[in-house]
Image 1 (tube, helix red, strand yellow):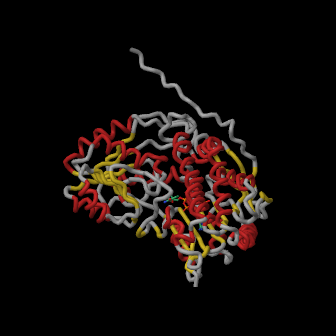
Image 2 (cartoon, helix red, strand yellow):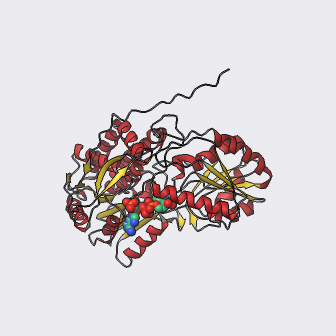
Image 3 (cartoon, rainbow, N blue to C red):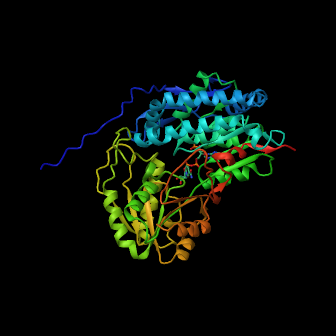
Length: 479
Ligand code: NDP
């Protein structure tokens, strides 16, 4: 029989309307920036320029913070049930326009449409629904006599889950009565700008949600603005440390969600085929641009060869290409810079002595791409086993006993997440109890729910997002 031809199934981008140039969203409306500097946001899969984005300067940030300060006077006094109504409206509109958001997210960030459509957008809407539900129940939990909102919250988010990180931050902040100035990442600002349009559409009171686009300099202006009462940051550990130092002795709140190098531990009694699926999902989801990615595979020594064999076969079936093709598993790398970082770390791993397997596939001729990759024969001291690669690259280490698995898993400066694969419930509990990780999955990976707190230990940061604990990140004790 002849081989079947592959037939692509492209999601149309006609639903999306992108402006040539964007200003900031301040005090309930889009306004002309003070800064005359713009950057171009490009599609990482085609290198096509999508729009020009203002690089907000000190004056732009100041205007947004002042609007948020005025907004706070009213929003913090707005009855909680009214605040909830706005969040419910936003949640419903996000659902209604989810295809548009999903296509835009895939165009601007490079992630496969099946992930932005089936993971990001449903999660975004459910976060708004979840925190809308909390807004009028804060009294029951803590009593508003004991807790109060911070005031103006500066929120700085990364490029790997642009709209979802917005939802994780904006929904709990608004539910608890804070107002927000958000700075999205320079490579992925478009869905945040579309979200600002929804805020206009639901008549969210002026100054409650403000958006200043830009790069790291804009983020630094926000961090250093004295009108800010709290900073919530997700991104690299190096910028997280900079922010912690910059905040210094100022009496403001701070939560940091930083990097990770999660161990995904597979014991020899695990259901191996299921574990292979979980390991693939753990590292190749979103091109590996995931802070909690299971980027260190820890295999019990006696199943190493069998598991690697199955894993390589499974990896070979991954489809790399156009993010808007509904069959794509691995989309584009988010930026040229990130591609260079991944390439350089992988080259270093090969030079150190790691054995590299990459799938055989044709990569598109334009755009930024990286083949799904697997390292074996790795020593724990290699950089590929220690540094966050933030790409589709898995590093394998082996262990003999559960004690050794725990020791290797914890031998990292990070402490964000981990995975355990075994058929023994007692072994799951024994292992989980000993892992220094904020989130631990057993016989699954990368499962998220708005009611479940997420955050790390050690250099993965502090503070929690999601659940009741996530609300606490936006409330402070009355003195
Ligand atoms: P950054 O930490 O630089 O970016 C995160 C956010 O912080 C972006 O909005 C960024 O702006 C902003 N920012 C940058 N510098 C400053 C500053 N001095 N003050 C305030 N805000 C600032 O991550 P990158 O995008 O540069 O990625 C670098 C590496 O970080 C990646 O290779 C990856 O390893 C890791 N990373 C980890 C993430 C995680 O969730 N753990 C998320 C993203 C990256 P802008 O991007 O617009 O310049």
